[in-house]
Structures are given as structure tokens and as C-alpha cells.
Image (cartoon, rainbow, N blue to C red; front, side):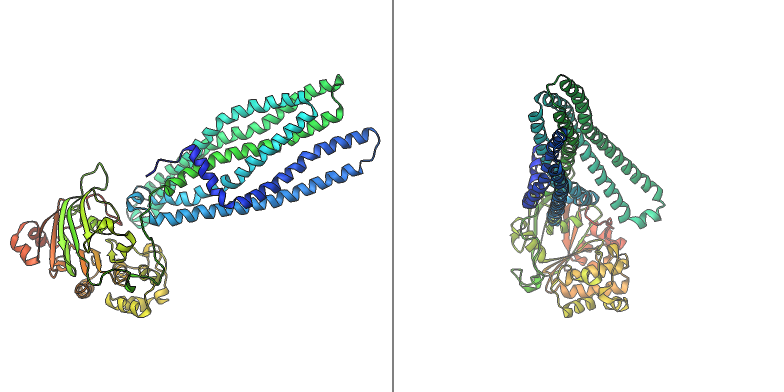
Length: 598
């Protein structure tokens, strides 16, 4: 992973987000600047108005010009604001699309280190802050600077002495404000990180709400979330406090400058070195100074907040995605000849060592075995011996520390990850089902499957009775994480999803644990039929699952300690005989992803 974006890098990244929409931003800035120019001209017209009154001249031209400047300035500013807001929404869309495109392609190891709630916060809350910084705040800073410089130039033209006095006040307070800006950026980043932690806590709670309720832990979990909410509140207060200091400075500049001009200007009028009309014009510029100063302070403060958000966004964008094609069009699936071979895939592990963490113990420590194409191979062993990890490595979710893994004679590192996974059907231990319809879930891995193929697979896994009983059939919503389905139904959906892809290698991680004996027996027959042409690798804890396997691998302490048929391993005795005697073959932990030691 690359180093976190520095402050200079964050500013550059902020400009990069704005660059594709520079035409709209330039147009909006130009219109806003034009509105500001109308404001710059108004004090000069007012000065001319006062001078005309002093000599009893006509003021019609001045009044009409003032009206035109006011109305024209308001209209151009409104159009400019709309152009900037439109660009702002486009900036947010662009950033979110980049994040959404990147997240599914990130390595599993990188995703494991970041809670989902925090990643969601970066896509939603941080991009919203980017919206303001990359457009409104950028334009505010630019327009505020230009307008302020223009006013100061005109003030100098009216009276150099008063101008120098005002400039001294602006520089003094501006220098103090500049010291505050880094604190605003730091406090804003802390606030966003705290918000991400709150999102992670909510995701944790809602993802296991039934367990929390069944455990009577609602109050304890609420207390944890309350602590995260308070952390976010405190960080937000710090950002608001420094923001208030920066915001107050704009008003302070004008007030101190007004007192300075009033005293010094009054004295100059009294001694005749300055006219009353010039003093009125200068005071009007001073009052108009409130807008650009406030705009500049707000813009700079917002940019500090925005750079903090950009750093968090680019922490994700800088992560290295998996190489190769992430996804194919719906028409191209494994069934249409994407794989280079037909039949089952051969697998070879040679002295594989793997750790989930660099400082952790090896989950696999010299694991080695060879499986020929086709047939059913079962993997058994006590919990924590690395059975689920074998599957994760075959899917190339993680890189091994040493040794080698090959599929079809090709080292796993030479495979394009997307190409590799198109040859594999993978049924995870907890058989996750996504929110959406039953049809969406079944066709997730094979969007180009025909109705006949879908019907055939549903018959194979005994899903037809379920579908016939649903109010909208395949188009019935299954709920968040498939809560509308039973555990056994979710497993059958996951198996059907894998089979519909017609894989050459089928990985089943205890895929029948929640089925009743009858359904398990029927599905076992289906899997045995598939194993005639497909390599099937199954993690099993029930004795009934492995007795018909062509080969059984016995894992212990991250190594294959024995292999053979059920009868051969029973004759040898040892670990397999002890496991078989219990009829469970070692119960594994439940979870949505392998953990260290699993």
C-alpha cells in the first residue's frame, strides 16, 4: 500500500477531482466574478452620486446604473451558483463511481483490515465533503481572493493612507487565521474517522441483530455505539470550534478596519486632505469587504475539511486492486468457452506456508498434496487446521508466503484472478445470500444462464418446491442477507448458484450442514454425479459426507498428515479414526470469512 496522501498531495488530488468539470467551474466562477465586479463598481457610482448632489446635478444616470449593477449582479451570481452546484454534484458522482468501481476489485486481505462501515462512510460522507471542497470552496477561495484584491486596489486608488491602514489590519488577522487552518484540517479528519467507526459499529450490530437480541445484549451494544457517537461529537466540536475562530476573523477584520478608517479618515477630512465623497466611497468599499473576506475565510476553511476527506478517499483509491479483468459482460460466462480446458481441474499444493498476519503463526505450514482432475476429494481435520484457508487460497483471495499452488499445471500467480474464478464454483461455509430476488442470487455467477438451465439446477438441489411456494416465484425478495430463507434453503441457493456456473472445480465448505438427512442424502447423490466430470473438493464434518469420497485429506496443524479412502484411513488408525469415531470429523467455527487458524 502506498503512503497516505500528504497535505500537498491531498490538495493536488482535490484539484484532480475538479479538473474533469473545469469548464463548468470556470463558467460558474466567471459569472460569480462578474457579479462581484458589479459590487466593486457600486461604491464608485455611489461616490459619483454624492458628488452630483453636491453641485445640484442630475442623478438619474447614477440611479439607473446602480439599479442595473444590483439586478445584473444578482442574476449573474445566481447563474454562476447553479453552474458551480451542477459541477459539485458531478464531482461527487465521479468520486463515488471511482470508489464503487475500486472496492469490489480490492484484495480480500486489504478489505479484511477495514471495517465495512468505515468504507461505507468514505463512499458517502467523505465524498459529500469533497463536493463542497472541490467546487464551492475552491470557487469561493478564488472569487474571494480576486474580489478582495480588486477592492484593495480601488481603496488604494481612493486613498493610499487609509488603504495602508486597512491592509495592516487584514494582514495581522489573516496571519493569525492561517495558524488555525491546520487545526481545522486535523479536527475534520478526526471527525470523519470517528464517523467511520460509528458506521462500523452500526454495521456490526445490524449484521448480527438476532444474536444480539437473543443474548440480551441490546443495552451493551447501544452503549458501545453511544461511545462512538460521542467520539464523533467531540471531534465535530473541535472542528466547529476552530471553524468558528476562522469565521469570526472575517467580521473582526471589517470591524477593526472600520474603526481605523473612521478615526483616520475623519481626521483627514477635517484637515482637508480627503473629500467627504471619497471617504463615503472608501467606507462603502469597507462594508463590501465583509463579503469577500467571509467568502475567502469560508473557502479556505472548507478546503481544509475537503483535504481531510480526500486523504480518506485516496487511502482506498491508492490500494492496489487485483490484476486482470474484474468482470465480463453477461453473455460471456464459463459455460461459453472462457476456460481453456474441459473436464475437471487438477490441483497441486507444494510446501505451502501461509499466515493471515505477518506476525501471526502459520495457518498452513508446509501443506502439500495433489488432486487429479475429476472425482470427489474430502478435507477433514480439527478446527483451526486451515481447511477453509485452502479454499481461500485456491480462489486466490490471499497470496501465500512460500511454496506454490497450481491449477491445471499453471502456477496460481500466473492466472488472471478473474479467469481463475470463472473455472471455480465456491460455496462458503455460511452460504451468504444477497439482498434482492431469488433469481438475482441464483444467477449472480452466471447472468447469461437460460431458463432451462436454471430450472435444471433448481431440480438438482431440490429448490423447485420452495420456488413454487413463494408468492412471486423466482422474483420474490429474499430480504437482507436472505433472512426470508431458512439456513438449509440458503445453502441450497448457494449450491445452485455455484452449479449454474458449470465449474471445473467445485469447492464446498460444509455446504450441507443445515440440511435434513433426506435432503442431504439426495444432494450427496447430485454431487457424486457432478464429480464424474468435475473436480469436487469438500470440507466435511459429517462422516456420511466423506465415506464415498475418492480420497480424503486429513489436515492437522496446517499440514496434510494422511490421505486415502475412508477404509484405508480407518485401518491406519490415528487422527482420522478418532474423528470418525465421533461421527463429526471435527466441527469448524462458523463465520462469513476464514479467520486465522481456520
